[in-house]
Image (tube, rainbow, N blue to C red; front, side):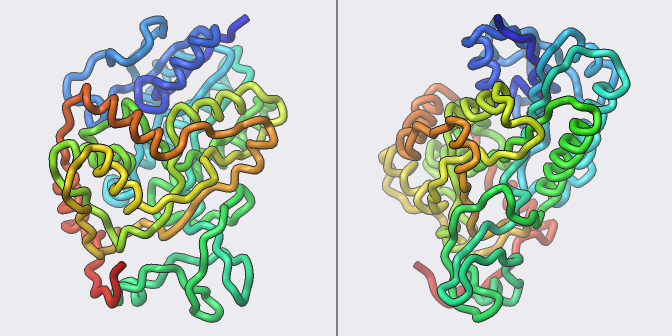
Length: 381
């Protein structure tokens, strides 16, 4: 018999796919979402992509009375509601902290101080709170370096160097035990969400799991929000015959996971008792460069231009980080879609959508705020 589940942020990209899989397996789902105009557009109403069997309540996670009503009678809570995006978080500071941290605080205040039937809470965290991932130095082995110094970036030396011997190092998988080193307001807000949730969940014996999402992409990711994930931003640009804008040299590496795989991982952790009170990476365990992502999208769209690699540094960005997924694999998780297969799925969906590429405006805003570092690249690849 299915459970009654509340999904905060359930009308959004990852949330709505979560709702689909919950309903498909027999759960009863309530969605609580404020329909942020940056994601859903002005004057937004219930999205057409939201499963028709899902109950929908429009509300903000900071609104205690509305959220309290949404929690009534539910047995499981999936807390996806958040402001997302590294760059924007560095100037929309109050918005990110109040939504991500205060909103999570309101949720837990209700769970601790009001009567409810909640049996478990799943919190959406992020790979961004690692900062740089792990690397391996030929001389010093596994290292966990701090962000690259500005002096190095100004010279256009993009690759991470060993802090001990200054030779280039190779990225290796990053596991959940790595020391956290947040480099953006967004990352710090997700760290706070995670820490508070696990701390309070343990204290009050409400099983809680933190899911560190790596770079998720797929259908329903906003093609009009210039602060969403790289795949959707690039997809929108290429669709509009505009070369994708890429910071640094494009060889920085991430772990791109299709939303369908990510949601399977989430629900595995929701169901599995061995996941309780713990933290799990959800990624593919395979690194891909930002340039590879852009080139694959351009190829799949059949375009002839090249990405616009600008050799500038955006404050808050890291060089490399991809997931060690040994921990979640031990519970039975295995990603299924390759990056190319996933991007084909994204493009098939994007062909049914209108897309306005606003990345130029977003870049200019970052420049105005002093968050883009002018550099003088010595070498380019």
